[in-house]
Image (cartoon, rainbow, N blue to C red; front, side):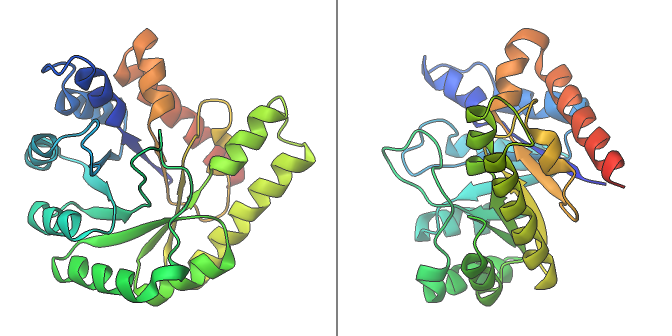
Length: 251
């Protein structure tokens, strides 16, 4: 059954707007768990714009579902991950000026460096995922560095879906979903797990959730946004229901 990892970064974004103690990301993680989340994702950024070091320590101690740490492939972050020991570390590109992650990690362009990072994480018994664009050369490079999971970047698909009036049958949307499907097939053929995420929401998630072999979706902003109106537990429950409906339809 396809799983849902809930990214709670933007709960911390709201807290950091006032540099206070609420809302608490750990509380958010508990609410997400109660709503049906299978995992919690946080991105500890170099500039600490939202999630803080003490957040990840408390989450590691208190969360009873999978913890996925998004991180840049830096010495600092590798050291933190090896000490923290999340169930999964996902290597992502990171730019100080970007609002959110804007594209996949260029694994093909830094194979030697990333192979060393993956080896260090593996020595700490941490599964490594890479966030990549739906490109054959990036999938191949992910296998070469020893990654166990590839999360395919769904941003281009999500943007096409919105631009074309949520018409999933438009040529632009079909082109992007086909790229994700083909990348996922290549990921699985190379013995890695196929995950997907970025810019997925309540309107565009089902075509991705119905793709063959997709194991897990990571969704944050849409869920946290809806939670302002219905509560986080209910927002997660609604997203999980959409994902399950799409997966059952495919089966």
